[in-house]
Amino acid sequence: MNIAVAADGKSLESQVSERFELCSYMLIVNMDDLTVNAINKDELLGTSLEENLAQKVLEYNCEAVITGNINLTAFNILTDAYVTRYYGAGHSVKDALELSEKQLLKLIKEECKSNHHH
Image (cartoon, rainbow, N blue to C red; front, top):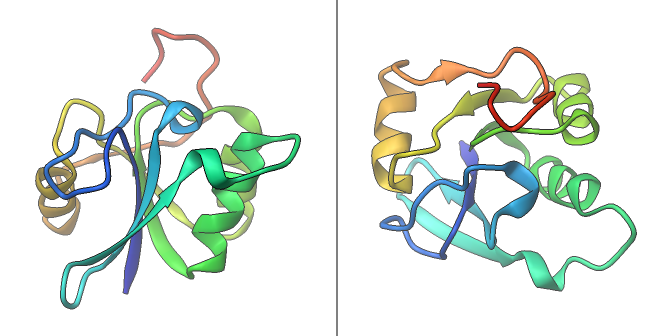
């Protein structure tokens, strides 16, 4: 099973990004063996970065995404594809993955309308 993590770096020790579209990397983590495929955000060309990031999550058949706040465009793409969204900002990628497996991360049930909304 794959889980996508919007991260500030490309390792499991990196921090989960505060905002989905501001991540430096989208990490695709295989939960069976913890192998990481790091996708550099700068390599995603196109008009809508949020859309491109969300499409990557779908391309890799991720069951869930761990991120900080998420905007409407990406939220709708992920929700329509039944991808579970977890709020993991403030944690390292590794810790956030462990917390999600224990179902201790908050679900993101709506898009971010402001910078102060979780």
